[in-house]
Length: 322
Ligand code: SAM
Image (cartoon, rainbow, N blue to C red):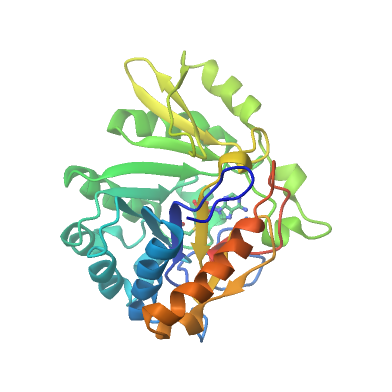
């Protein structure tokens, strides 16, 4: 097993199935850009082999499929079929939910029982402004169908000053009423938000402010979470749970166990590092040739992790898989 000086190792793999997305959220995508698939994206077969090799070489236990938007990809079906045979402890998926109604049968058939749905507001106009696309009612319908089918749902919300702070409490109540766990994700300095003249400082809302807002409505107490969890979890007695992924306020780099594989075959050991390691060519090789080379690259990827805190990076989340 590859372990660093701080005792960290890779346990959780995220694969970006495609860089293509049917949204262009303002904090993820710079003005005027649309998200299309990269020309040199890996095939589903190569990705499945990649996951199998990484289970062996890095000790990966849990997989999250993300993007871009994974539900727009024609490779989803084959990927799910392949990775569900690999004996992983958990497979989940992060989606904007726009195609959830249509893709739910496939997800259920493939054994997916946990979804993270990104939803920044319940206001249809603000939704269109932030996502630059999509339809709120369609997303909500998809979440209801998934819930009715027994899928456990976490909702990701990025609080943005001037855009959706009025939605913190309505979204929390909406989630508590339905048994969804709301995760507030502090805005991260990534992509255009890490470049000079960006609007990060004006938009950022930190955990103390969020907790103060919630505290005015609900009493809550910190709840248990796994040691390498990125979210701090809170329980509102009798109503449910919510979490905060506080990259800036309470950095979690010391216990980070994440590894990312991009849709074009690059390994990323840290969101805050612009280092990346190409493995696309190894995925066509037989196991005995691929694994030793992969191990060398995994040592480098683990070495890319920040020691203490996320410091920002120009890499774009949709490229490496949020
Ligand atoms: N399309 C899928 C979705 O919307 O969930 C998966 C990819 S998206 C990049 C994954 C997550 O990254 C979303 O919850 C999104 O809100 C989050 N994200 C993207 N850019 C971010 C940023 N700069 N700071 C915080 N979260 C960000």
